[in-house]
Length: 308
Image (cartoon, rainbow, N blue to C red; front, side, top):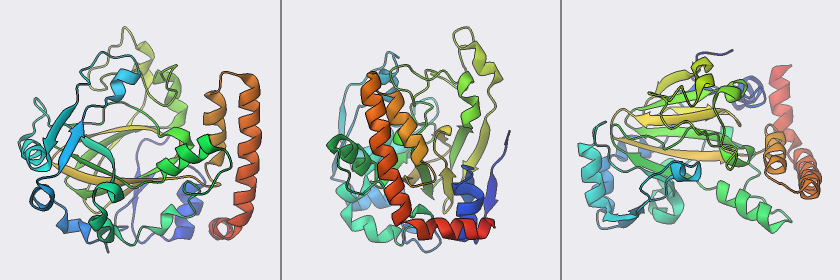
């Protein structure tokens, strides 16, 4: 299995699609964000200066969703006081993690700082109109660009893969972040939650409870550090988590298209306990995917032209 991750630059869309998107292979693109104003502008001090009075809230904890006892009490503070904690954060006393925040809702003025978005995101079916309201609501929410700010020693709360079968694009704007990822063929060692299929029950990758999770001793991780200005592509169903080695600012985007639509179909069908609902979900989503694949056939031609 793959135990390292390639770093590429000057990667064309055709090369990306043929070598990474359709093969579902992760990659770091080192120069994808070179035109972003955010690189060099977004710092902890910038958010403190420009948005210091903004009220922000913490408290939702994914660990609670997979059965771990945790303090989910909500914390309200200003951006200024939060950034002060970020700058003083240590592994022993990490600052709260301001994560999965919809960037354009909270900071609409910052949209221009991350333009243009990389072409690698195309085509993206998440913002499309879907006939089923539940599907439309879930997928449209997944189309949002999300912001993450945290301090040294902080981490994402759980090992997971992104829901609805989506690809994840992680873009490091400031600071260093260490990623730990596992390929889908390692899932048997990662103890997925029965309630939340894309969340792992493992509560501490650095000090795992091998009496409770003995198979984890066989898991083979890929570890690396993402630097400012780099873009990480994590394909659908690749398990991952991250921890911050310094004050960190990053953004993420999720993508769904022909390359990973089969993962969405499987994810939704497995989450339906009623067999008839599961079959109906598969039928609807297969039809929706087939139509969109035909509509966006020019993107596919670009990928397979390079592969040929």
